[in-house]
Length: 309
Image (cartoon, rainbow, N blue to C red):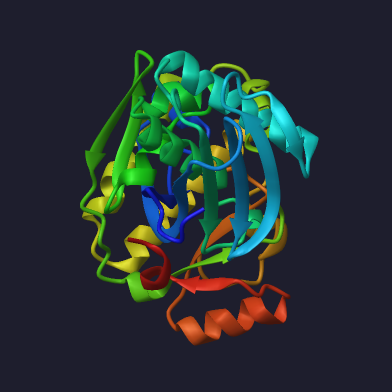
């Protein structure tokens, strides 16, 4: 393998600020692409049999490896059989969509790497799908929906360069720029909750609550629109609190603020799957907020400007 990759792709991670869950039912979501990325590098070689050598890394350290036959992506060997089977399915679906994918190749090495912790839930799967779709020159939404399902907002964020509006209309993703650049962003922060959630399990639980009213879907969409226009932190907090109360009603679950931060003086919002991954908080002094969360044992705390593109 040469030291210089033949192909090099990267995709952004993401956070969903509004319309968690209800984006699946047509609500307009406000989504944030992040500065953290995943890369995929492809190295060609004339050495060896017709095989693909895969190495997945986190912050430069390998955590998974496998060898696949290039003829049908059968697994030759791997460090984790379950992960190898999931990757095999992705590669086989890609080959079905694009029959020319990796044909007439003698040997290839692929390395993926991240500059973020995989356990944070910022989009290791969606960034992988996005990178593979770029590599194979196929529609990333088709690949995402077949492999993982979900709304697809994370695929939109993977290539976005600024906040976006995302919705689904008759099964088709609709993406537009969202001029979300709050002048009070120094009063917004994010933290990793320490609780990893399985998105598919969360969506399944959401579906158990039955059909969501059009009135609530429209109100969530309106909040997404309004957040972009707000210029002061108090009004922003009012809309975020309203959004949390609506979702609390839909999910029949307490807000994260009532559940774990009842003594916090400002607003805290669940992002994505409730009960896990990342939270957003508002404050008036970031250092004071950081001290508050640090005393509660939270270690991964970010300023808005450090995280959002």
